[in-house]
Structure formats: structure tokens, C-alpha cells
Image 1 (cartoon, rainbow, N blue to C red):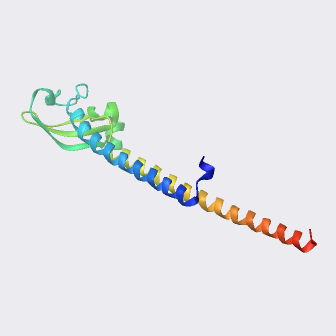
Image 2 (cartoon, rainbow, N blue to C red; image 1 turned 90 degrees about the vertical axis):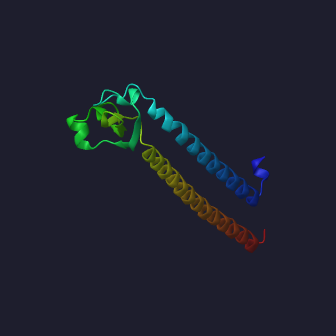
Image 3 (tube, one colour; image 1 turned 180 degrees about the horizontal axis):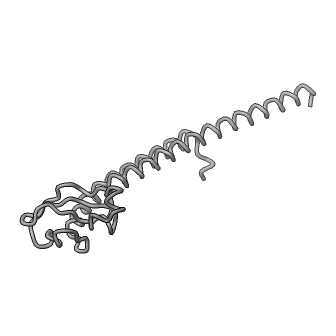
Length: 154
């Protein structure tokens, strides 16, 4: 089936699939960021200094989830950094500013994903040019073989 498709049809199909993939990624990113924010507010086990004030008091997330510094992880000076290596800053109404452990940093995951996508795009482009050059070489060899046969009179 795929062998009967023309080059234009294949390029069109690849562009459509790429566009569909980007559309799905945009929708997934939007839905995940909406639901992920509420999930981080309901974390019960990520206690640090402040004894889980976010469970009993009104709070506001001052700084989103970010990686802990090397010193904080090595010295274990911040209890929120011990469990996951990531922390978010919370301002509780009564207790004040506290840190809470969080599972992952969204921007690092996105950066890693787009780095992977860029590398795959470069690998695809490189592969295309290798195949194109090889096809040109094979076509040239076939033309030379045909010319030799015609010169011999076969």
C-alpha cells in the first residue's frame, strides 16, 4: 500500500501527522498544567518546616517547583529537598514562608522533551540526506551500466 504512494502524497501525510502530533502535544500540555497545579496543592506527604501548614491554613504558592541546590541536597539542610530534590516555596497565612517537596519541575521535563524532539529532527534530516546521496550514487551507477551496454551494442 505504502509503495504505491507518490512522493508528494508521502510528504503530505508526514506533514499532517507532524501537525497532528503538535496539536496533541499542545492540548496535553494545557490539560496537564491545569490539573497538575491542583495536584501539587493537595500533597499530604511532603512536609517540611512548618509541619504541613498548607493542610490547615490558607496558602499561596510563591515559587513553583524548582530543583534544590547542590549544597541543600548534600548537606540535607532543607528537609523538603531530601525526598525528591525539588522544592516549592509556599506562603501560609499564619505560619509564613515554608518549603514543600514536589515531584518534578515542569520546565525541565519540557526542555528535555524538546531537546529530544530537536535531536530526532536532526537525525531525520541527516538520514534523508544520506539516503538521497546514496540514491543519486546508485542512479549514476545504473546509468553508467546502461551506457556501457549500449556502447557494446547489446
